[in-house]
Image (tube, rainbow, N blue to C red; front, side, top):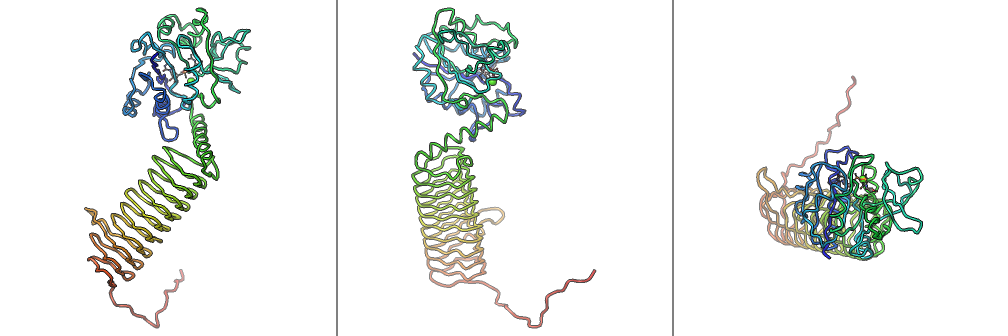
Length: 456
Ligand code: UD1
Ligand code: CA
């Protein structure tokens, strides 16, 4: 039977106190709704319908790259009414899996279990035991343990409120049955809403057995209503990622202070110190060490690389054996070949740096091609910008640039050249020679005295 997924995302999300629609708030840098859509996609459904309402245009716009169908629910009259909006688009002989747009951590494994354990012509529900079930729909069972209904908090008796097994809102229903039952549910309840879980009792009156599948943990099915819950699930998500990495041979000095906001591939024996933030696509080779407070965004790092404390690397490639930092900034378009050293307070942008080259102190390298085993002295600046255009600097193999040098681009420093400290170089420098520029005016004034502080 073909599978349709319906994701309910029309609710207001008032308690977020935000102008951003709730389902667009991110976990690990990705909107809540996108997490659920990615999970649903892994089930290979024939269609995914998003029921949207509040702030809908913004949601659609931000997630337009995803292949889903958008269905507007103009008024939010309840979860039953929300699902009814998708009914005209669904064939009778299909199954419908209902997910909630604000419960982002549901796993593919639990959903697969639900789909496998529930007979195709029956109703299945994911439930969980919540230590504090306040506000949630309780699962009612008969003496034999068979599920008979969901009762919402507002309608529940004092005894029913003590039940800790709750409806997660995630269920699978045959489309044909859904079409029969939805028109039968009413809004004669404390909220004046059409409650989707009321279809359970209807199924039971038809002598249909309800399959229940337990979620692995409460957080897997936890819905987000406010920013405290958002933060809690952010950490739960990060713990999941951290655990997976640790079990694959990565050392995390503290998994509670580790944040992945993208996709990471890590070889064995990589070590992360605390407070590392990884964004976008990250790949790290074996035995590499990432120091504390490092931010990596879309970078590829080879084997045996050491990144020391407080570095920021973006859109860069770092080959085996490089050492970077502390306090280095490596910007987009940087490619460091093997065994390059980039030291403290160095900024590199759009530059290719050859193997074994050292750029160790207080330097700006931008729009440059640097050869092998070059030494760039402290305080060197490639002057790449003339106020209107950017220009390129070429430094060939084995060059030595003395400290405090300005290289005014476009410029080329030939192989094996040496540039004297403190030079402002404006023309190409030949290979294997010493080039320097300085006003030869050094003088000493013998009886000079330092200024003294005046009395007030
Ligand atoms: C619902 C369930 C409750 C369950 C809980 C789990 C009902 C009546 N109750 O309660 O049994 O324990 O979820 O979190 O279903 N939505 C729409 N359109 C609407 C109303 C809601 O799209 O008209 C969406 C919301 O955006 C949300 C989801 O449906 O993603 C759940 O709605 P919500 O109002 O949060 O339901 P709860 O009262 O939490
Ligand atoms: Ca809710």
